[in-house]
Amino acid sequence: MPEYYTKRFFSERSYPLAFKIVIFVTTVLLFAFLLLVYRQEWLTIEEWRLILYLLYLLIFANTYYCGFAPGLTSAVFATHLAATVLATETASPKYFSFANPAVFPLMTKYFLLTIIANWIRNVIELLQQQILANKQLQAHTQHLEKLTLAGEIAAGVAHEIRNPLTVIQGYLQLIESRCKKLCNTPESFTLLQDELRRTNQIISDFLRFSRPDKPQRTLTQLHTLLKSASSLLYGEFLHKKVRIEIFPAPDMPQIYLDENQIIQVFLNLFNNSIQAMPHGGTISVYTSYDEKTESVTIRISDSGIGIAPEIMERIFTPFYTTKETGTGMGLVITQAIILAHGGKIQAESSPGEGTSFTINLPTNHRDGSCGEGNIIR
Image (tube, rainbow, N blue to C red; front, top):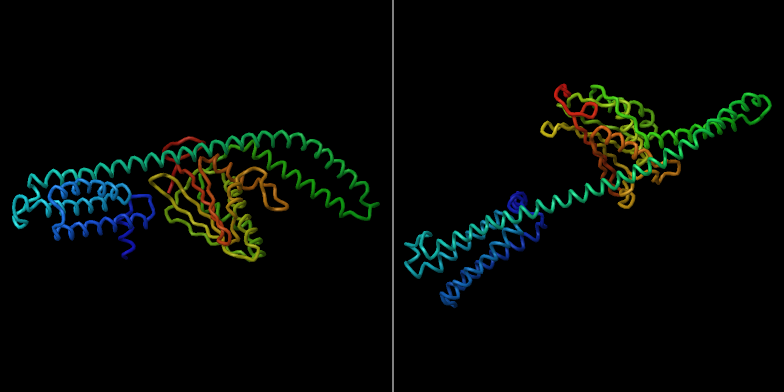
């Protein structure tokens, strides 16, 4: 409980909590020391007036670095010290009033400085947040430019390779039909056909990335798509000893989505989680709906081996993979589908602590446009 109130007291600033506590505690000790000095009558009234003006610095520092509440508290301390020091000039403390001409100007300036310093800090923090948002937007724009360039390259390469592969596959089928009885190794033809199909699938992935299909949206329930995707991998879950737990939000509305594309997104993320848990584990899926922002959130977390920071930076980079048989296109296509739906996807991971993917989708989009009547509860 004390920790809760401490965080609430210092909750308005982005500086470390320990730093803010040091500043505030130092201020309190300094005020206590000044009161002790006053009782010892070591300083003259002129020296005390100078000290009372220097208290502006303490008030500003507490407000700027620690927050409005610590700044206001330091202003109260400063006002009390000023009243104590200046009371002897006009009357005894018993009859002293804060409206006294000797104290009122200082007290007013103390509290006014608190308000001004708090406003200055709020403006600075808003500017810092805006600068950070601009940097993130710039990085996102650069990432999209790279995706566009990679997509153009992929489309050109895929187009040039697919035609000769089709010819090879056709002649291979012809040779297989004629030599099936003569050849003693029919499994060789099967192997060749499998490899051709796998190569063709890779090319299809490249083309899907470079020329993504426009979502064919229909009104659907997100939880139904989650169940469909998990049921498709039911056998894989059993084989790999992976348990999937879905925690649906009770107030989830129906929204317009391309069912096949969203199921593909879930399949890609579930497969990644399965591969990250070679000895079994748990996949947890949480959904939520924010009526204020008109968006739904899906968080898919696993208890796998996690992803190293240097790899996390590149997981959405086309053709980048750490798997021997991977193409590096699964997460890229997943991201492209989410972006085509007007949403966003983010990943969080630490080695040994699992990985989480968070998908945010707007509920007010239908065929790329916003309008009323798109949400049905």
